[in-house]
Image (cartoon, rainbow, N blue to C red):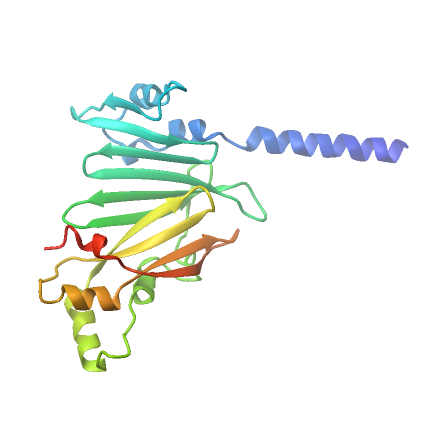
Length: 230
């Protein structure tokens, strides 16, 4: 009985430390380094969290005179419209051997959207992300967003790959299933090449497995994705 009691105390102590170390999404947001949101000081960050339960989002005036909107906040996910041209997403991803890590997606929406993806510990120590996409970096995944249709010649396919390089990648996080969807966008595309762009580019979904994102679903691009292409 004494051994069981000691084991029970050790278990309680371990769980207590885990609970104490785990941070809420609000804490993670407030402790995020300032350079990620230079036009939101600590006071404005705090105000952004004051979302009444009766509304779906909260908007504040940022230091540049624009509007910043918190449109989603859960225990493990946060999505913020920083400005008309920029968004920021934070998703806590579970790991097998340690606390959850932070996946941060920053997306700039110019003529075509482009995302950067970074990973951090809950103390905002950056994690090397060169092998977190099926053992590769995000930029190395560009070839995964290309496919040659059977009816297209190899020469035409290679020509299009050259035309559309470099390619921009938009990343969208889903808090429901810990997935990231990669959507390709060419920097420039002519009306003549739109149809072929359609044929060779894919939208792919990757699911977090506790160590890295792994490909799970392939979706052909829809016409809608070309709406802003010129």
